[in-house]
Length: 96
Image (tube, rainbow, N blue to C red; front, side, top):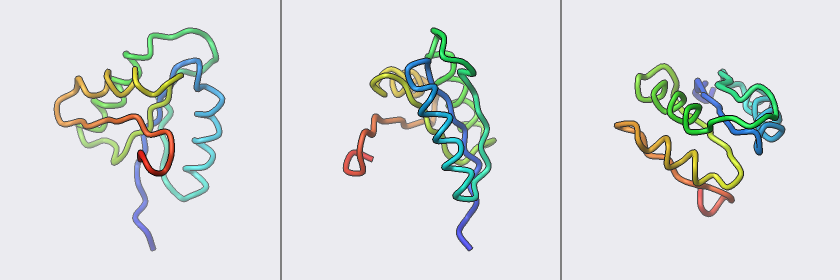
């Protein structure tokens, strides 16, 4: 059996609906998911969410993180401010 990951997910308002679908997909694959927000499609300070996800991963509470925003660049820049985290924009299977 494949390893079950603990996955932290976060997004801004632009990716709220996509995040909801991603949560269902990751759970269907058998992984544990924690939703760090946003919890509604209203403007939010995405750097706060990205840093919270990155800090949780760096602390070892989660194995992987998925951050989503309008472009993916802002959350990656924010997450990369956390020591030990390497985040990148991945918009297709080649860049992932």
